[in-house]
Image (tube, rainbow, N blue to C red):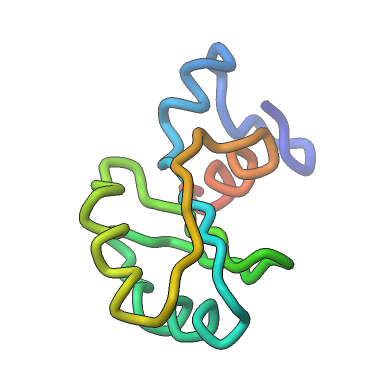
Length: 100
């Protein structure tokens, strides 16, 4: 993987995905999403939170425990639903940039 002419990583795609933390997509209203964004940011667990049209996406640090993070969600307001997922390609690239 190259970034601005510099080698960021040499690995198989599945290894790159495994080296990046997982994601939690949360369906909630905008106010709850803002409370979650300010309430769960912890560099050892949540490295980034992006407010989306349907709620918020939380990007977990490698080694973070999604169950622990998900238990915190209800403290911030009404949650309609959430799902755990592997990072997509853009999230893998962003994580490579953070590690440099």
